[in-house]
Amino acid sequence: MMTFPQKILFLNPPSVKPVFRDCYCSGFTKGTFNVHPFDLQVQSGFFSPEIFEIEFIDAVFEKLSFEKTIYKIKSFSPDIILSLVGGLFLEKDAFFLNYLTNEIPLSRLFISGDIARFKPQKIFNYIPCAEGVLMDFATSALVDYLNGKKSPYLITKKSNQKSNLLEIKSYKYPLPREEFIHKNSYLLPFFHDPKYYSIGTSYGCPYTCHYCNTHLLGFRLRPIEDIISELHFAAKMGYKSLYIRAATFMADKTRSVRLFEEWKKSRLKFEWICFSRPDLLSEELVAKASQTGCSLMMLGVESFDEKWLNKMNRPMSLKTTFHAFHLLKKYRIKSAAQIMLGMHNQSKGMLEYEKKLLSFLNKLDPDYVSFNVFSYRPGIEDNGHYFDNIALNDLSYKKMAHRLEKSFYFHPRNIIKQLYHIKSPKKVFLLINTIIKLLKS
Image (tube, rainbow, N blue to C red; front, top):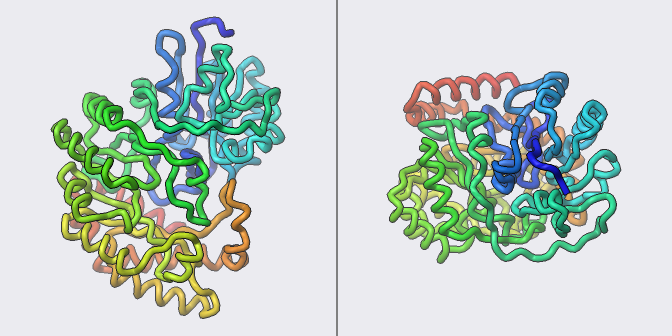
């Protein structure tokens, strides 16, 4: 049992390049995107202010060096540390955390993140000083463990590391600590007011696409009354922009309609954005989303090759995709197409593929596009044979991504679109910064 009060540090470790490590995914940040470490935000609410003094250090957002991060942590002198670790950066993250615990040996270290969730044994191998791994950031497992209670959602070196996670049917978490929310001002260029608030509506994903590990988390829906309560919380703190953190928002149509109806009754005004899929968008849902302030939907398009999508266990007709983007235009909601490069019949060659992809995007006419190259996410190694050719041509696809980004964003039509959307000086600054980074990369 602990003695109180206790100091707990929520940590996103330093990185030379901008990266993200949250929601059981890790990668390199694009452009000027500054995304909340959402796992840590959710966890903060489980720690009562009467018992825990908290500190939040996002060394990536604050652009802290290795040494400055160590200095800030030592100045706080935490009793407990909950740190994110990214699968793509495991060796560097492990080096930092092992060094840190040598500097403050009395602090108790716990880990969350993609590699921790899917490969907890690797954490104990690489970071032997870690006391435990938090297997589900939307549970009270860590605070329960600190109070002497056992939980299947927190694995320690002494416990059974093959612990079977019990199925949780509801996605519930308390409101986050205000100190956490006020610590940093995260900005996204999509909003008129770029400073935004992150909110969860669902956990995991009900779909089983072969290239993604999110479905391995299961799928849970957050109670609508909890979502509305947090909307009031965000409004009270002065936020006007909202980022809905759900892998597939609106996956349950009936519930989504109820959510939008309750949202409308609340009279809360936000500009908001979300991730979803083309096959989830009906005219009713898009209309209700527009009425509550949706300004952008980021849709997983992935490929124009229907046969390849079927092979990926993601059946999606081009007709469905074009209809979804048409609906967004009809209701004046901006669109972003998520494309995964290499998802095509490779026998026709990369040059032919690039031409077809450009032609497809010209017809689709999204406001934004994101080109991603497949990487092996923890938990999906069994599907590796699907991506052998993409992995062999990894560098070529990365170069293609850069060419396509420049071709898309510097096309006169898209420059005019971006200029049209500018409504504030902050947004001008973010757009210029994004262009500079795109040219330098």
